[in-house]
Length: 223
Ligand code: DC
Picture 1 (cartoon, rainbow, N blue to C red):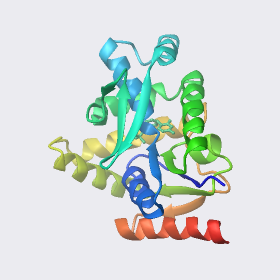
Picture 2: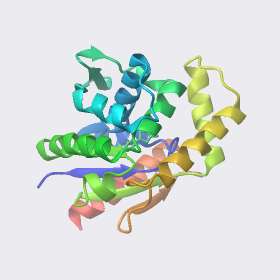
Picture 3: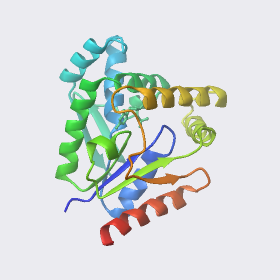
């Protein structure tokens, strides 16, 4: 049986780094599905395609040659063979990714690629629709969240460390805007799947959060 762990949650919940650590503890890969929407967002920005223009974005997505590879330093994301891993983490690309991910046809294409990868390999997948759509039969399903202010605080510190100076207020405002966009889009909005287990990391350390998820996965595997 494939070991597939599905982790969904809002922006800044720490999904990506927590999923990395959970995957390492379980000895499996981690697929960051947001990176694929980010790759499309970046491509739209680079080509000057309006992210509000659904037809053009869907056409761009159909042609998009996106792939991922996993090395010792985690996932690398490629567009037409170019490593865009570092380029897809800017605030502009975050907003563009959130905008293009609203479109049903874009989601259909991304979901298909993600399901294929998960069927081939044991992995942890993190995103917004993994429990609900990509892997409804995952071994374990987790909804990882934290209070908006705490998520914004973590994002602010992370950006500061990378030299991306932005005020805390702006980070919180952007985060609420993206929450709003991700949770209220008509197609597959972000929500906790009825059978996903809630992990609220507001008052948990990074290690405690990872432990809590690994314990839940182990309980599913052995129990
Ligand atoms: O997880 P992230 O911040 O890298 O994701 C970027 C955007 O992509 C996010 O605003 C919502 C979208 N996304 C999605 O709709 N479905 C996923 N499985 C992953 C990300």
